[in-house]
Image (cartoon, rainbow, N blue to C red; front, side, top):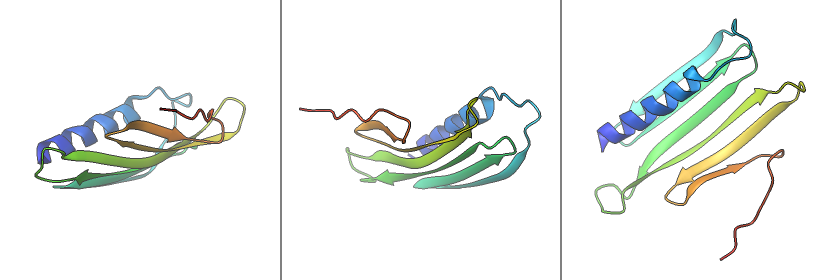
Length: 109
C-alpha cells in the first residue's frame, strides 16, 4: 500500500507540473512535499497565481475496504483576470469538487 500512495502522489504531482502554463516564464515560489507510509501532503505555488495544496490519507488500513482519501484545493487566475478556487475531496465516492464558479447539481437517489 505504501507503493500505491507513492504512485498516486507522483502521478498527481506530474499532472500539476505538466499542465500547460499560459505564462511560460512562471516561477515556482513554493514547493513542499511530505510523503509518509500512510499519506502525503504537498503544496505548490507559482508566480502566475496558481496554487495547489493537497493531502492524502489511507483509510481502513489493512482491510479489504482500504482506500485513500484525498482533500485539497487549487486556484488559478483565468483569462478574465479573476482568481478561481476549487476545493475537493476524492474518496470511495469519487471526485467531489466545489467552487463558487461551478454548478451545484444535487445527485439524487
